[in-house]
Image (tube, rainbow, N blue to C red):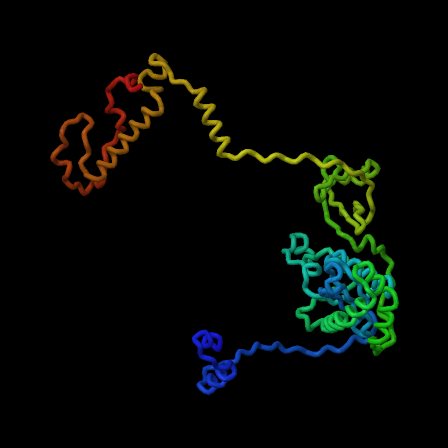
Length: 395
């Protein structure tokens, strides 16, 4: 309102306008509804819950490329582990989690946001519905295989510990890297793995209520678990197709009768591929990509070509052809015209109530009389019987 008055060359301060509107009772304050939240106490043991999030920020202050800092914070001790990546992807989540597991062990639960990396938005398949399972992302499948409970936060406040840690790092880490002259991702990761994380955890660490470490020892191959897996059906020629690639299974697996059975195509983070059937790795060899299928011709063009060929092959029968005798094969155009005359006759009967005579004589005077016992009754017979001409002359 103050800006509009200024355009009309009337200078009134916006605060003065607000007071005037309050006096008149026209000024209303819109307050957002606040959702009630319960304060959650820290977990008692180290490794009982670990929060993970990606922090997007100009970490190099324009000196280097854009990147994201993947941060993991223990809920009980505030112990932090982080690493720089180009983007927040499933691969980045795999790498940061593998670093935590190799350093401390497998946590009991992992607290993350509702990003598409961790939450699947698709509908469950028939098999998942029968098994009572919800669709999972690749990251969710890997967490289930590792025995780590994946918890999805409903709001940023729910995982406020890692959110506040992101703000602290955006203030302190940026200045430390500026003083150290670090301008790339590789150099920043070496800087973090050095003395920075040790000093940071010593300064901001928190003593847990219980001395018990809830981390579990890892006994699985992280390279195979933290991967991408897809189910495919073995074809009749013992090949498997996945992502425009074909794989030929070895003959030594003939005893397994793998045709029409489902195998798992596992893609590791180093781009290696494994074919697995019931936990057993199969031998295979790569096949060249198949030919690209040509698109079928449109239906309209095919129908037009069929009409052209039909016009070329169709011939008009001669006058003395046997099919022209007595109107047996008079032709489609002739019969269409006769049928049209019959339809016109029936319409005239329905509209006038006085049927026309085939002989051409005038209609009877009693045609218009109403017969209660014979309502809307029309004369039987076909209009074709009235024709007594030479059919051959029609063509």
